[in-house]
Length: 291
Length: 258
Image (cartoon, rainbow over all chains, first blue to last red; front, side, top):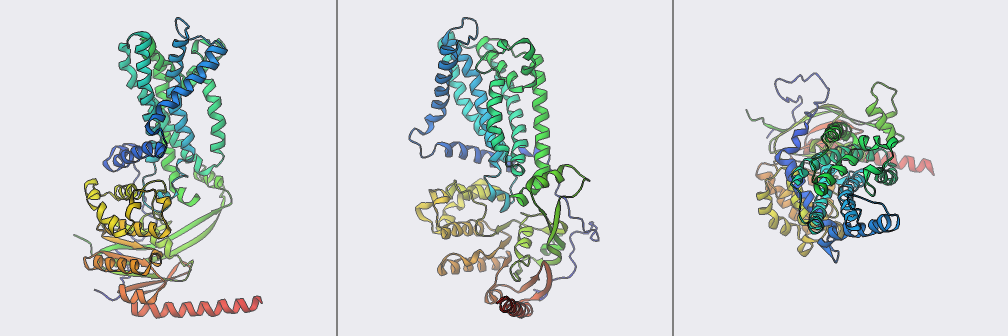
């Protein structure tokens, strides 16, 4: 063992040692989310997040089911019984509940992810500052964990649809296609908002207002057809409106998705997905300095 | 060829930009070539040295001299603003008191998460769980959320989970000062065992005795610059002199203030 430390470091023969520019960490392409390391992290954290949410509560695993049913009853009472909004072919209350549910479930997952995304990085300062952690998985965890709740609700919805309509439609096969687009959109938006949330602390207050506005701009408690002609463009510029409408088409009406609209909102989703990732990766370098 | 060096630092500098508002930082990050919104602070300047495989190095220096920043750079948590760093082998680190634990996760979940972060195969993690729980002496609390732990238990678990996964490089900030005497001795025993097995060790301490006992070499930092590196026998006296000098200066300021 030498007594003194060497003076001149030799990092590797081919590197230019006169340069003092820091070696940039290789850019991580979006496909790296599929590698073993990040997948195990996502798997572990999603299951932990899902379990942790209801741990210690009396009703435990029942909550993901009680929640949508509670909302369903509330909204059905307000909008169907009191305000007499009509949905679908026969305009019955049962039908209204189904239409409402098929809108509320995806909206619930999307809005929950978005609401959590603004603080999800701020909530894990230890992972930002104390360890080498691929932070980009955190918004993915948030998205997937909410999506898991949606799956539970969707199963109830199917059961109700069978009960009311006497069966399910073949068009149900399109469900994963729509869900895929929804996941891309939500994940992209969560990347964007979680990063912004670190720098701009007003995000969380802005989002609670923004989400209410967004919900009523989306045909959830009313059918898309009820929108006045002048406001029809809302369905096009708001991917959630397209997603909700298509869920209704495939689950309740037995129609395939509206392909023009599907192509349109999926394009938006893909744009959000890639630009959200790019934005997150670009800004995450100084998270540790800000927090 | 396998390099003889575990850690190589070449002209490492770390600059902090001081912003008045977090939004200024975002502006600067996104709008390139526009006006600058910050002041500069250099926490480290041109620090270069190599650490041989299996060597143990102490970082010495007064508070604010850049020791922790340097450790964070070695651990990979911080990126240097200038200079180059290379580390070879599985590196585990115990930085500050907190470590990377999630307050809401149980001890067990945190150890598993920690293992996945380090890239340890899940089978290996599960095999080591009992060993880690036993070493940390947290008993039934292993399945309770970390936020219910005492600070001593958190540090013990942090130590246990970092030490028991066969690191090739172990980086420890002043955390050793926590835990009772008996646990400290147990950790030191384990660290000695790791060192004998060839783990490279780098840690921050203020205790000259620790340096003599555990480190062949030491590096003395002051004001972000490396002022001396060499064997412990050379560096520790210089450190003590520096500290006494500081003491004298501090005393003078105190008297003047009165």
